[in-house]
Length: 295
Image 1: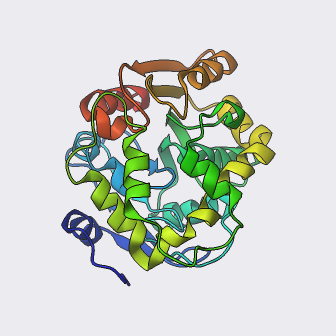
Image 2 (image 1 turned 135 degrees about the vertical axis):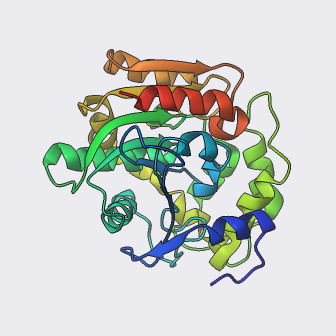
């Protein structure tokens, strides 16, 4: 499958997962049982742009102590299929449904980050319409630009949005990817090897060339915010908001706006933490997530 060598950490991640049929090709998923006696339903973890399920690896052991974990690579990302086609967030939601149905699960706790927040919103909208084939019991939302007009888009994102919705003719420079991610961390630098591993996963099947196609989720958020963010605000499942307060993209005011729309939610700040709280502050992040999905 791979057309470039995988970083050793990415190779180890690959060995832990499997592939499930999806709407545009195979979807990679890691699905592992709880280490101990489960104290709730499986946790469905949805990553953001431009990364993959590897984002969760630093909190995986803590979350897995009492929960089955299901973490797919959304189509176009990580180890999943990367066809050269337009990417629609509703199709990404279709892929998540395929993963959950394949896992034989009828109830989940939903944990989402970045673009995954909006994919989660698409799932919640379907649930409100009565078409989702599983129940969302509780949910945790973290650092994602669900109110897109408030987002502090980086120059790399703005550049990609200016390009046509088609794949690049040449590979993206690795430094554009890794340095761009490093600059949206908070006070803690990325762990050694973290960004190289993510780049290795992005490169598979020349996925780095698809970034002008994948970035269209920003435009889709603008068009469908009422449906997707509206479902995040109104879905009856208890909501916990976990937010790094040093995020230059998904700025703290977004978390405050969501709390105003959903005053029964719990807001847990991670101080001095940027856009990737699960990587930057894994112990505090895992504790906040577990508090949000317990009960």
